[in-house]
Length: 309
Image (tube, rainbow, N blue to C red; front, side, top):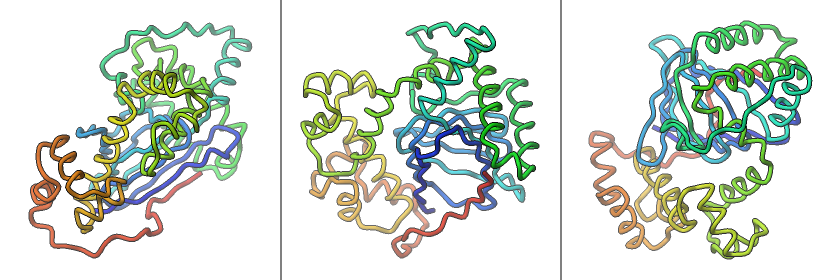
């Protein structure tokens, strides 16, 4: 397996619609997402890795991904390529949509309840089965995307995005409803983006709080509100997650992986890894790749995913 890094830029000034086609199974990929996204699996399966768990999505499933690093694998369905359609948007764009629905269509958006369904607890990754109306919506978008004009028409993208948000918000059982409304908060986005940018850097909590323009006390309180745990613990878990994926997808040594994940002391890295996963890095690799012969360290390559915009 291999890990490919992809980044969705935030420089785009309007919501964009992207169609992904993946004809081959390329293993786990690391994606650094700079905008919120709502996607739909049209064909194949998608594995999303969150902590030490894996969510499997199949054709007809809907998902939301928040800003930050995500690890997933797109799996074709036999000789049919994996196919996905995603909408990427910023807080300003979702705020504009909500205003349009309110002023133009007199649709009142009720504030989301603070208690959430279990599916929505992991706020950076929410999945559910799409209901018939939403499935039909994405199938219609797929038809539109065959038209070269639509793929470059920002007005058309805006219209379809408004329609999608309306369909999601008007279903009270939609588990991503609350997260969509909360994503209008630009200060939240800026805070989370800053944290994710520095996960693998040698940076102190005090320096992070300064970059976020917070006092140390207020930074820790806000961090816990966003990520449900203290800063040091969360950063360590993110680094260990990256280490776990590197162990099963590259032939790098344990010490090299520790360095890559900003845990340069090998003994400390092994201790942290064992505490998190119940085994040492070497045994973890052996258990998950028992028949894999060592391969040269993977270097960045051009992604093989076909993208239609």
